Image (cartoon, rainbow, N blue to C red; front, side, top):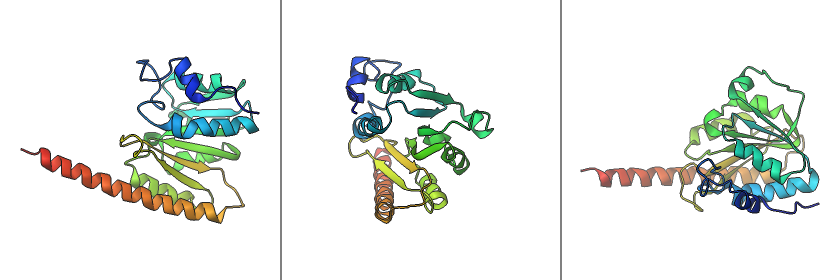
Length: 210
């Protein structure tokens, strides 16, 4: 069963975007996440589960939480602080269909905790992972053997340095070989993009020197 409206329509109708609302969300604008990731992802999830469990880690903007409430039918939405995640001061019995966390709040310890909170086929979505190549490599090194990982690099859609998402799937015994090869290839392209951006920024910086 499909949702009657897309995330894009919901954002526009309810004026949730930072583009028209000074307190709005940035996933629609200036970032590309709603258009290129969440809209399709949420539609596919809605077909399987109309009332999913959703966790946002350390989310300061309540409109992000409102977005999921408007799209899904009576979802369970939790917003747990980073401190409570680290100290495991929360209900760890509840399992989530997807978890959203910002790259600045991520490390391997946090990811290990969050993976154990996922339902089968659940996802950890790490936003704003652009320019975090060392962190990305560390995550791949730690979790690639047991999890499917994929980078979504949207910087060629809108040239914003952080405009990237890293998705980590729940542990799965049936690891797809094709997915793993594709994941390695995408990581390679991501690293090339990071190198290109570093060189471009270095060149611009030198040109601006008096």
